[in-house]
Image (cartoon, rainbow over all chains, first blue to last red; front, side, top):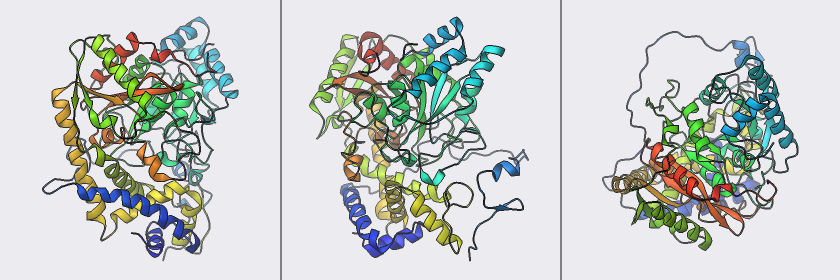
Length: 93
Length: 475
């Protein structure tokens, strides 16, 4: 069972603000899904390897060659928050 | 111009009149639409068609209009995943599939509606509002590629691209009575597809008939070094367009006819399998015992991958932004307002499933169950050529019926998600009606054996009339 305090903590980890009024409703819906997930406990997975992906490839290498990149103005075209060729955000620390 | 024209009919029409006339007729049809399938129309479509008329074009899709799902990047054309958080985002580059389509002469009509970030089975969670099923405006078109299926069913585009993470091409294809293919994982480059669950998803075509699916695959499939999971393998999909299933061995997984299946859907699927017997194929029942655990495994993996993939939407570089005193507050407020409820739920659950103390219980366990699900497919497909069953356990449900109960929505995906866990290809073709709504037959093949399922689907289409059924308002 996920508690409303845990919902708020996970919200912080995921950088999604959840206020105290919403956390009860989230906890209820998340618990119904987590309850369903609990059925996996029935499955015997002793000695079974995990499958992260199904592509039959191991390592994909390429030559370390310099190629063209996107013009700076195109990279910055989708934001108003920019300065001297950089993205501009509030302070992180 | 008649709706539901196929690619060869369109090419003939272009030869007889012009690409401009064809594109203009689709734009006119879209203008009268009531289904909210398109989100954005391209200003360039008519110019592209005119250029093809003026300069000629040798490509296999010269002048053929196509609709593109909202999560596939199109240079200069809005791509928002039907989310408020990407409001106003215009990609500076084309996805690999868009480059291929343009080189083949296709005319991109516009972008199609979807469940926000492809997380859904109904296309109700879109920031643009729901898309309506052309067969019954009170019902959902399926999802998440609901717009891409509905516009093809309504004759607003002859073909479209969707993406399929857990059934998002096949479900709306089944609900809207069109054909949809989920290719083998690695078959089509995901470069430019905005990721939701990257180990599961593939771009796939939707069309009114199987031949058009093969034609689109011949254009968009193939190796691309910009997607590290792209497989270098040559194939000609249209070679599979043969009416011949003599001796084909069909496996019918009993689990795909499980608890809760609609009786009329069950009958339509069995009638289809009976038809294959008449056509010279044989069938045997097979068991895929881990099917019942596939849903939980799928949702844990998809949500975990989503929590990572969607971390990039933080208001810093594009899209919606809510100001804050520091970056963390800005990002937290931006994401709280920018994402819809279902997207937030999935990110929260994914973050929880990956967090310290729960990683082994949920994420690692789900990956191990994925191995068992995949082994079910390996074993079943070792003895048969294809697997068949109903794509969806019931016909399209009513708008609003399930949206407030996430778990009931997830349960609708029971027959489609195992395929994505295993990475095998699957095609949904119309196989009849249940109470006036389309039913889809799902044909599943071995890894990279698209040609066998295309051949099976094409043969069925040649020997039945199911794909000729049209929504009531599309004569």
